[in-house]
Length: 216
Image (cartoon, rainbow, N blue to C red; front, top):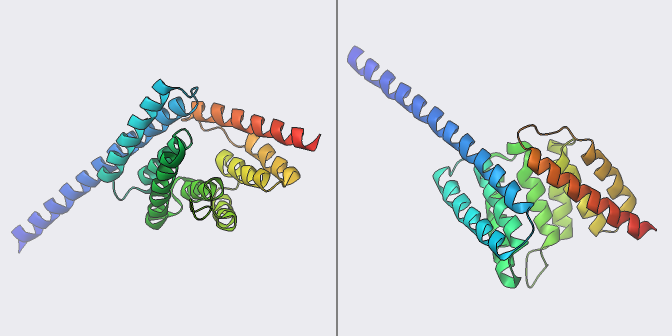
């Protein structure tokens, strides 16, 4: 009985070490994905850049398979597919948007609060950016529901406020959009993602300029 107990303890210990290593690997892969995405996403669109972007899409899908139970990796695979959909052409772009949707839905099932609810915010954005039936799955009401869930989890985040403002702009609710853009500008800086913050602030200022033009 004692030998069995020692053997069981050893198995548990080895499993614990394995879990810690998997978590460390997932964290490293996640940071790499975020940095690569920020670099390619905020670089001028070109044939060469699209090629780099497409490789990132492929790499992210492989990582999502390696870390199948990581809501963080799954969410970022969705973000990368969704971003690539924006630079891909025509129906090809819609195909990547549909793939991104599945990744976000899976991430929500694993852990909806991972990355401060980013899967909700990203999926909500897809719902109002993608065409509706019969071409796509776009749905403004569904978008609003998801974006609000993202805001509930992360009320002070730069992305959750920016994308909600983008939705409001799309709905021509300009004054309300401005209030959320101002909140996004005042969001706490993400020390581990300076390039992403810089790019998002550029997005915010661009949208503010577009709104002010509409209000003139």
